[in-house]
Image (spheres, rainbow, N blue to C red):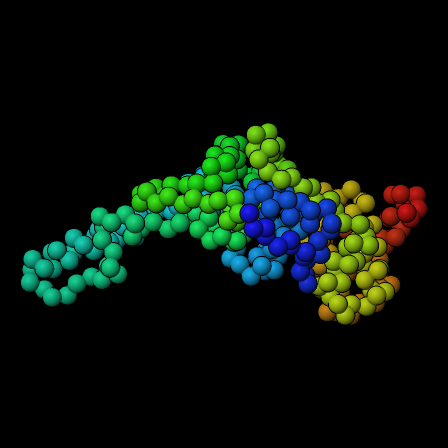
Length: 304
């Protein structure tokens, strides 16, 4: 069986060795990679990075509480078919009246259901070997959604409703399937057994500096170190919503664009990039009044 080339990260996605191993295992075995971790740790961006690095198509399906497995496979355009049916009736009336004008149906015929079938992201990924399929935030869906995926993953074969088209996908042609979860609810055990599992831990300060450096290669060293220090102090203050890597990148982009010196970060300029909860505004006012270093010392009794 030909093996897919191991993914090693990109210029904008720093891949740690453990995650690299999990990606390689999933891609080699043709199994889905289930990623858990707090929001903003790069779960969704991994799928985007793999697609970019391999120069292949990325198919995405954001899961909601209303998601059904059928939507992953096919979308039937009932509205277009109804519109065409009405146009066909009008054309018949125009012909009967001897009028030469006709409504253009674009070559579609109402009785041919295949004209109204649009393949969903899973079906399209199965038809394109080497592509990437992202099923984002599966924990937002109902348990039956995850259970329904079991059959699809086990069989590697889907039948398209309305047309009967069969799409068979051998192991070595399976797309790279990345499934993300923020752990809002537990997933069925049988589902977990059919996935390669990886938990993305929040990066260490040193690793976060490296991540920010990837996005801002010309960043001032002192500003970067100061920003990371303040950022981790903020995460220690038991906020309702902890800022994550994405917020850090936005904050640093603002700091760099405005040219803030490192010694001004203690009062958290650009705080709206980091504070995302009304309940945390009281703590923000304390930071702006007393400074982050003061609150951090009071909270921890000193610096780590």
